[in-house]
Length: 255
Image (cartoon, rainbow, N blue to C red; front, side):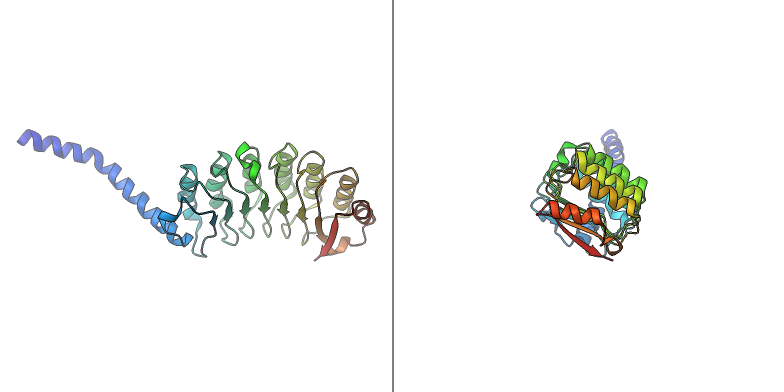
């Protein structure tokens, strides 16, 4: 009996760390589901995740783990906009998507999330995965992105990443001339399905609009129907000419 008791205690001691880890994981998932305003039982069937304002960067590792393990197989729209998650906050989720999680995902919202160039690099890796071929909408608006960061993402798009992307939101992102030129270049070789491109609220030079106009005249963005540019470029002759040459294209100007 003494030997059995000793063996039982040893076995219990061996499994206790695993039990404790499982309980911690259950607690984290419980907190995450509260911030997602969703019962755990609904995860497998949900098509959209739009978290409550309570969502924090600390929740992202738990969300990424759920995505990685296929716990949300029907997800089509993931909107993390306006949560001020930062580059480190969104990185686990972007890494999960770069590994092919959520193959049905069609829309990804990361607007107003205090993102920078590190997220652009992570998005470039994500865009290269074949599972992202279904993505149709990407919102990066109201983040602080440099030309080099946008160029990294644009390079992935030029190489065929996100082939079904229809909407790309880059307004109010501190986008500079280098970034706009990179976006224009990506339209020459990729983004064949893009219908809407928003670049307003940025202070890039005329050279950036020149690059866009040249790309459009050369056949870039063949499906583009709506291009939104900063108001200071409303008299750009090249853009007007491109619009006239492509009847389906409407150019809007905003601040």
